Amino acid sequence: MLRIAVTGASGFCGGYVARAAAASGAQVLCVGRRPGPVGRHLPWDAARSEPELGAADLVLHCAAAVGDHPAGSPAEAEQYAVNVDGTARLLAAAGDRPVVWVSSASVYDPRPGAARPGRPAIREDHPTGAGHLNGYGRSKALGEQLALAAGAVVLRPRAVYGPGDPHLVPRLLARVRGGVLLLPGRDVELSLTAVENLADACLAAPGWPPGAYNIADARPYRRDEVLRRVLGAYGVRARIVRVPLALARRARGAELTPYALDQLARSVVLDTGRARAQGWVARYGLDEHLAAVGARTP
Image (cartoon, rainbow, N blue to C red; front, side, top):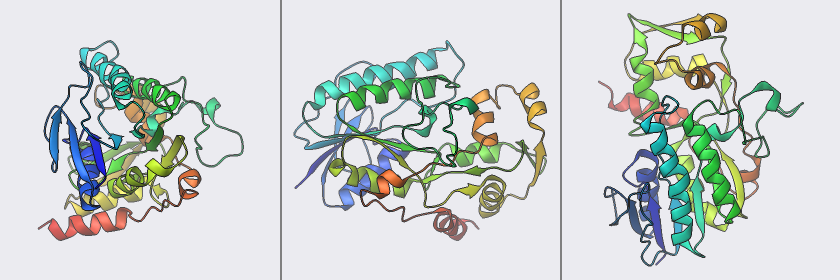
């Protein structure tokens, strides 16, 4: 029986990956501060120690410190301790075991000048070394550099959503005020990643050549359409009002940081051709997720 160590299995992505690994017939070791939803728990504080990986045959590294924190804050320092130093500790403990390292499309340089001329979508060779708008992007970029140098397979999803999502939908619902959802700039096209598609990639990726791979749903979505549909599925009636981008930049505060503004106002479409060339298929999409949400919503 294949033994798979899943770090961060108590979190959203890691928990789904751990359940998918168990469903595939693997023996799952949940490595992290808290137990995962299945398998055996191996305690690990990524910010402070090297993990004990037991008899695992391979490692799926989903643990990460996420969040859009102020520069120089203790929370940002924790991101570096987990996402960079924790990666180094994990790779040392993994030895010659295969490692799949879950990164993020936030590693890509968001500045307009970083884009490759003539390319409608972002490929894996898009620059990742500068331009990040918060500590999360910077620390993930540094962590994945270590993983790539060690020969890992690195997966770069964008805006992961699905059952139990603790980030995207709660933040969206919190932004509705008085029946109005304010959005910066014009409608744009965006890649999103169903957690099911990410889990499929995690389980397939140990057989892929080392390197980085974009992971996203089969097609990009129009921002405004997606938000309307999500609000409707959760029974929230709201009118979308677009705020001129220049005004949104001047008015931004703790809620609409430069990173959050960029995520909502800039078109980001990932080219997933490299993963698809390995046989990976994005089997899930927003339609399936919203149908399930609608079935649960009174």
